[in-house]
Image (cartoon, rainbow, N blue to C red; front, side, top):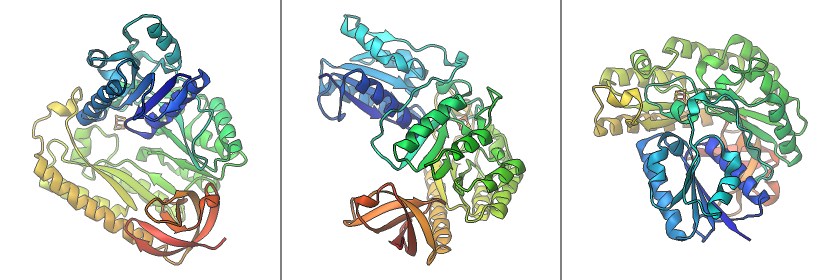
Length: 434
Ligand code: SF4
């Protein structure tokens, strides 16, 4: 039996797509093996979000070839899409596919087996009109499923290469979403995380559906007990959205509202489509209406031109918002984006200092948030055993508190009532009560 191995860089969408590709290979008669093992085909699903991601992608391509000189090396994903010639010229690469045409991967491999040396099928993604269906038929885990419902982004934030790697917004057909969720529910999944490149755009291209509509359809599927939204743009949260959200008990009270900066001048240079006043209003709407809501976000420090004063505005703003967690990134210029050539690039040591301050603030806010739940009993979806803590299992509350408690693998995939006893680092220790 021929063997295929996969390596995935980047985001949850890439992980979803690798799972789908794995299924295509399994159906095609391949055995799936570890990337560090000898295989006949290596697939590297690349990322291009920073220059470092490109470098890592190249490293993994070379690593694949070193595992087996005779292997077919396939490079797919965002880096392949934005730099197909560069990828194709890396010694040992046989097949380059970008962010579409992935469903034909085995046909192209056959052509290589029949004597073609190199194939590059990367086309112009900016003219892509359809959502490429890549279904997942079998799953390794049986707890939370990340489900891709949307492709592409048309926002063109000044620092981001993704619109050029993924093309314009395309929504997955709602019937296909429902079919896949039903299959997931039958497979024992209790939580669905709706994900995509720009989830907030879901339905904007096909008009017959919307984000709220797809949430409602998923909500109606028996067996699914939780629906979580991947990262969304703040302006998705309107009064109408809140009205519906309040009536959907399976919708997790956890919103990852991408912020990037808490300073209006910086947001404007970033070409983000909201200001702090709108963001503040959205946060108030959520906090006033959704009990136990937890808000998480992404913040970028050191965007070109970010002065000390601008950073202070961000610091004060995020503190005021009271996030339960923040992902803090240091800006790094991405070739091919407008911001890479902006004046006043911020020095690495200033970025480092700002990042450290915000991470400290994030830790403090996480603690303050978790503290409010000490003594409370909350339903926790148990995901896995804890490697470093024998006899312990871990999972998430619906409002995204990570909880560790004593238990065994039989609890995996179950929603248990857990009393939250104390805070430890960025998680809580609990005790199963029911
Ligand atoms: S919204 Fe902005 S940051 Fe997010 S993928 Fe689109 S362009 Fe990139």
